[in-house]
Length: 471
Image (cartoon, rainbow, N blue to C red; front, side, top):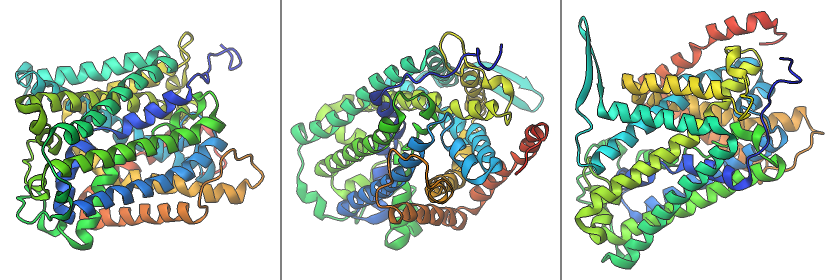
């Protein structure tokens, strides 16, 4: 089949689907789990709310750069395409390799296992028992009910996302709508039915047990930095729609709206939910929540009663599944774009005839996510990917400066707000976070560097037949 007659991606994803996919990937478990640690980090509800605002504004500054570049270069693969054009094929390849090897697939494995764990809680336990075991010398391989459910979740979203980009978008709209309703219900329920007072905002977390929070991460600049990292983790996924740029109906109009609209929706929800937390609980109570529970569960217990644990588990389960589906549909476009240019196995660059989606790339991604989920290595891998994630965030935001210089006459449907100051601020903070990662967790940072650079031999292998004229 010639390139002219081969199936191609179609621009069929509308604005609401694009926004839903971005929002779905941001609203994971962070808003349910991070407030406890952040309260211990900074010691005051007002400072916690301030950190959520500061982190949101920082991410918003990043979306301005992403929106300009994505609207100008609406190609499949998102960051891969931007980085390749701005800095060369090696940089683009290392982003794609890192995304496929640990970042996207590791996150999907973690979300799938999280979905299974929350389902186990909602059902009252029982899924964690071993179903199948195999001894290979000193190694014991086992599949538990949780592992089986995690695999079912991974392959369910793969099936949905192989149907068509429209089906994936509609699924994201439904799941994201449910997430938004749940968060709104949590906030409104707390204000309407739980006993509380806004005077809690003026109190401190003094006396909180702060289980598992290091003394070095409480108070001062270190505490504020740790809280910022927690909030940024909860906002992560704000650039999730970028790899779908080649399938947005009207990318010039809708991509900037998807980036900015999604961020504003999530920021507003996060502030409302955290305000509800502190309305119901004192900061000392928030900081004393057990690591086996969550602030959301404790707040719901005040107006839902004993069913709060089950309700919270269902909410977390739905949130994890929605994030998994959104991550799956976008993540597969990165190896697809690389394969189209000969920098990944060419089979992954095929588009299915009936659905017009890169089904082979979706399946390959699901297969590797399944391996990571069963191996249990996803937590270590995703933790070590923090360095690479912020490196590529910073480099991608920096492409707005590169393209303003190298492509001054290119059509720009959207111009980054606050250019050059806001994009520059985001780039500076991104690289400051990278430096902080090396200082705070050097072993994890170096592991991330090693995994990223491990892609170089693969680059040489794939690039050699292409007779590249530049690295």
